[in-house]
Image (cartoon, rainbow, N blue to C red; front, side, top):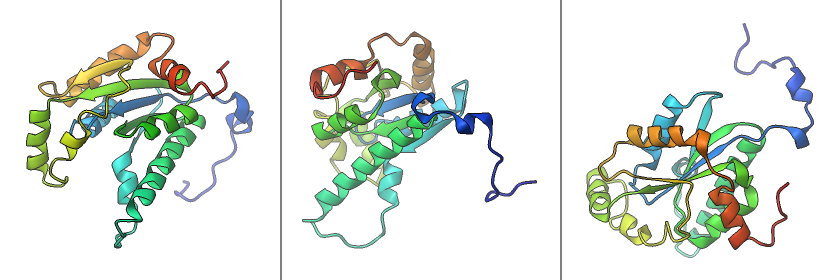
Length: 210
């Protein structure tokens, strides 16, 4: 019996040319704080068929940071580095052939532009997670672990790019029902994907994918 730290014998796949390795799918959930992204992600992990998915939430990356005081002047750059590292971790997992469910808050344009330059656009399913502002504020008060008004500040920015493969609304729809909508959509994702269209429109500097 092997332990967690024991080496696993090399398989034929381990010698595969990295340039030809299968890229994993990224299910990209975008919505404000408290919109239900993480709950949808957890539901997706329960119902998706095929290879196991990994849920990579951006909150987990913020939580990894050492618990020490950071000045107001230094915080914006620290947060930017955290977001950029999160993007690259997701890209790396997918490049290694893993399917990923990520949740994000595209409240600043540079975040989307950075992701467009990192992810294989045809393998991204961009999901808009909507919720009414009234319900977001109610959830925020109930949770008590978010700065008051955070969702309201993000509300008019998160979906500004305006294009998705599929959208869901958690105001009255459960996370599991939203996950089922997404799962049922996956075999029918159109071409070009939303990410391919956004790349063409917003990142013309990038080389065209084969």
